[in-house]
Image (cartoon, rainbow, N blue to C red; front, side, top):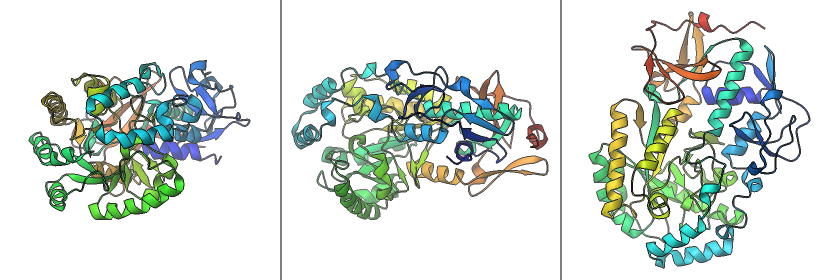
Length: 487
């Protein structure tokens, strides 16, 4: 491994100064990869030199943090942080976790039979089949339900080590969201049937009544034909159109050669729809194939997939890059799963997930199907959700945006730099006029975040996600307070 990779990984996430120490990897990494813990709460998957990784999460993975060696120049880790983070984001732990093995839904023949008969199945029949399929979902310990923050916890632990090695208590970085927003939220509508397609106009009216715009994911082939008038109207009203799979038959990722053939047709629909983003059917995915789709962003990877046919999860609530594609993970429970698998017609679970994600300043992303919220009972719950989101926005703490806007922001943020000039720090790069200078503050052996609000007083967010407390006003953030030791 290049000794700078861990440093680059941390800088990519926080957009902090170049002067943070390098990370090196201790020799003698284990073969094969397995599960271990960074600390008591944070599960990792990869190779480790200091402990023997466990074959499964159930085997009480050992803790590796005690074997970290810190100097002023570098931090030696008993694992490769790039490997561990990528293993989680790209769900490479699945092959060893056993969470999908033996499940009927992973058998291609069973899957094909199900999707051939699915259009003719009443919702009640599908619901009972899916409830049987998901039996035991609540016993899956990793990723952690209902939201998993493993990747965020790893980054915070690495940043804490970096700050300790330099003897500093405050480190500048580019805040995660524009205009100092506490968190971000996106609404997306996957249109599965002609019934849902016919409801799109009314759904736009309903979303607009709360001042919330959404993206509509349209299936290009076989399920229905989307009228040009509807597609134009979606765009003209300020909503967004994305490509939703190809045929929504569960087969897109079944064979690589066939996938590449389908990818070429999908690219044609990308141009036809003027789409920036993609989402696969039922969140089936093979992340290593994504780049062949050539979209600006994707929305096919769940944070935790206990209630999806393909188990797993990327274990993060922040966007990340898969090559040149921005991934916007699905971080909340889908409406169909909530209503028909859990049998919960309330916003209780959604509110719990929103609260947890806001505490980590993450992306709150929803999949709401026009097909499933037509009944009054479901429609009423969706209205409660929109009202709650609009309240969060009115407090100035949650940025509600279209997916393409979020992806564009994350791409711009990835190029921003923190510059020291005239005794102060500033942000440079496209979009920096909307970016806020933030600080990671070491407080009682944990990281808290402070935002320097240029027009007023800085805000500080603690890990519990409580209302921000104010710090004394400061006219400028002096870089002298944050000097790195000379090497």
